[in-house]
Length: 228
Image (cartoon, rainbow, N blue to C red; front, side, top):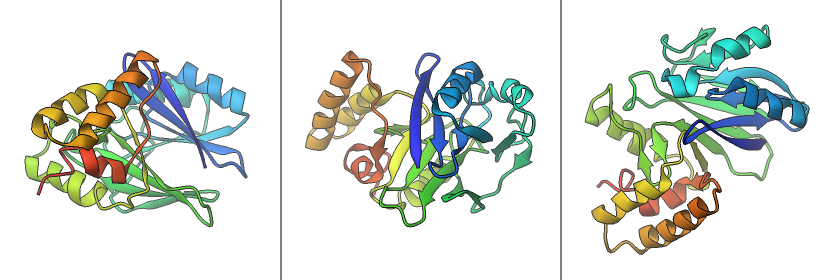
C-alpha cells in the first residue's frame, strides 16, 4: 500500500492510496480533481473509488467533476450531504481493494456524518493507516460543529484512540504548528510537545508536510487523546 500525500487549497490534504500489485487506486477527500488526476496519470494507476470523510466543500467539492471525468467512479461516505455520493457507508462496514482492507469508522464531532477510514494490507509488514479527515489531526482535532462533546470524546478516545499504536495518521489539514502551540498551553511541562513543536516549525519553514504521525505519537502530545 502506497500513500501519496497531496497538499491542496490553503492547508488541505488529499490522498491517493495505491494497491501496488493490482495498480488499483482510491482517493480520499477530493478537493481539486485536476491535481489528483495529474498524479493518477503519473503513477499509472486506475482510480476506481473516492472515500469522503465529510461533506464540507474543501473535502468533497471535487467529487462531481471527478465522477463526470471518470464514468463508473464510486463515491462513498456516510453523509447524504456529500456531493455526488453513490453509496452511503455505515459504521463498521468493511471494503476491499485487492489486498487493501478498509474499515469504516463513524467519528461524529466535527460533523454528525463524519467517517474515518482504517486501512491495512494482509501479509504486509507496513503499518496500517487511518484517514481521519477533520476528526483527528496531528496534535489536535477538528472543531466540534454538529455533535455533542460526549460523542466527540467517543470518536477520538474510544474509536480512533484504540487503534494500534503503529497506525499512521493521515489527517485533512496542515494545522500541526497551531495545534502544538495549544497543546503546550495545556501541558507546558510535556517534553514530547516541546520536541514535536520544534520539529513541526522546521517542517513548516521548509514547506514540507507534517503528516503522517502515528497514533502512538499522538498519545504522547495530542491533548484530545490524553484526556483521563
